[in-house]
Image 1 (spheres, rainbow, N blue to C red):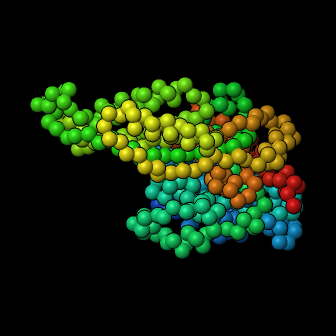
Image 2: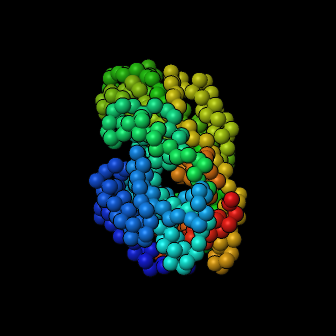
Image 3: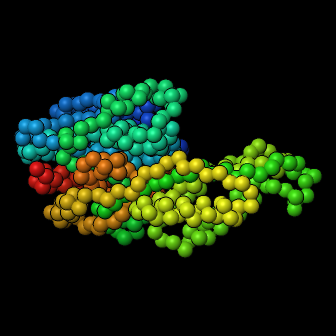
Length: 396
């Protein structure tokens, strides 16, 4: 149905914008490289006959009208920004595949009842705006106040964020094609995954308070070493984590103060992240960690929650539609959970939402080594196009 050659050519061209050899992608939201990438996509949308627009926070839309006046729109896409040093496909694959689907539907004279919108969301990849920012703005989920200095940094206003909110009644459903960002499909040789749900994410800023002192003259038994107590706390925590299989966690940021080789650390700070499909499991895990802080740390510990994004079930009807699309195309598929968060998480709060995964080679993502075979990329775009047509049939 789609033109695989055209789709892959556009996707690879987009992947050169912000690419730095030996480093990976340099295309943070609101940067010069980001604006160049968004302009490239907007031009491709207009060449395909779509009417384009941008909202107040910088989300890009390309729209193709349907045959039923006033019908809500089917929306498909993903994000255009990248993590520092990331790959070419995390996000942009979904945007360019949705654009290719629009082109293929139009070229084959398929009349959709619903309007179809391609979306390129902004600022999905974490950062000061908190991640999935563009889709949270569209869905009205930006509820926590954003510091004024952060708003100024990106040229945003509270009023603009509020104005970006979309009336949910204008949407029929949302679909997102994405690389898996894990090894499940690649290890099993399955070309398409159909996510059943998206994990929730909670993050906590943790500070262990010790006492700064001379590293040479302070006896070991008299030290209040924040580093030693923090690592002991984490060792006990991860020993418990290893007994569970219903959540994952990570500590990817750890800092010591004052940070000198000759000074016993007076404070240790780290960010604890917990992910699970079930909000109750995330809360249970946090309470276990908090109990360890209260009883086992040996020094005062403060814990502050910085992020809470609940887990999300994806629409069964869209899972069925994607499965039928795979069957019609003769492409094997499997239903599976998503261990990463996506814009579909935000969208699922306001409209039926579904996802399609293609394999990540060796499960690598958020890395310049991220890779998916051209054949799998094209298969994903094909399944997305067919799923859009299926969705047009099942929604009123």
